[in-house]
Image (cartoon, rainbow, N blue to C red; front, side, top):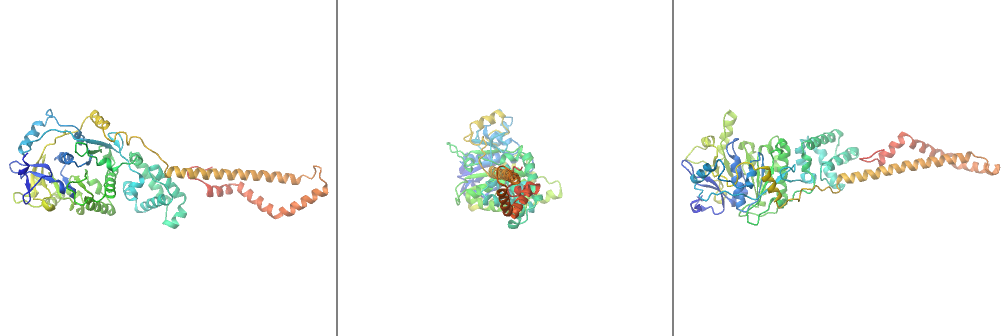
Length: 530
């Protein structure tokens, strides 16, 4: 391909770019995404069946070729084809070749790409986990759909986890800590605010729902190392990490919360890199509306903050959704690179959304943007990429180039072969369960229970000794002179008249139900009680 002919803005040549498409009668010039502006985020939007997945696929291919690692979620299993080369036997081969010729993609060829498969459930890829502590109370409250009061109790639990040295690694740690909080609620309420058993019960029920949805597998160790998402192969191509999300989509809150957590971890852990020539990682957030549906303002503010600042860490974020209106305006305003597939306007609301989408583009005098968004066919789009100095380019109608990898899902055998050859094979497969909050609280409970048992044994021993003493005191024979016996008895009675009466009363009380409750109240454990 003659890249010298691919010029944008004020004559700036696209030396570092990803070719998207273009060309053809009635269409604009060739369109490409400049790598040095790729970390300024982007949007891929359009109705179902208009070609969003293919656009995502070719962008992933382009970033990989440029040495940029990619993370994306595969909602329909279609993107697994990135791991396998396309073939001339594919039914759309002729159409692909025709499209390549139309847009001037002269060196178009089939190619496979380095892929790592991940799966929260560990079925279609390597297990991917984090700890409860790393998830944090804000995201966990969003995942569990907690009320404000319940979120407050959860924050108290996390605070106590730090202060008491109780690591929260998996859900059983959190459950154990919540039980401990409930048992100590009166004391904790004085220091941290009201802790109600109703709130703790609600959180426990939501944790049960999460476990029933398979979410327990997300929490634990070994936790994901971000460096495994940022690998570059020896041949210089960035690895494409694909999260199997077809089953995960049955739990949309879990899907959205996990991706947001991952984005937050990248933001918190990666160092500042300024304005790099190309991104260090590109993150695609498919079905982005799930992130913002019914999200509290605090969470949306967090997303906006991450989107605004994470580009300085060298990370580009691309939201994929059916309608740009799914993304809050404050976030949408930061998405400089845009690929808009067709939008359908069947209702008044759809027409308003279409009009608003058209207004976000820089007008092209050659056509009406709103009409173009409505009319483009499958495999076509209205595009606007950042140009020289980061200025949005004029909107263009674009024929999207065909993918080099296989279009559509791969077989189970092909997927397993890719998993077996992965550089992280075996690293995350075995769950580790080191000592954490659950084990620590269990040990404390065991020690408390043993202390309570020892107290009961001491009680019984003292009771037996008291019986023996009383029996001996009543005995007046045994070879002792009566006068001596009388003196001994007299002295014993004088010494024990008050002290023995008090001791006997206390022991009697401890033998009863009330006494046993007192012992357990002081020494009783979390997991074991007599």
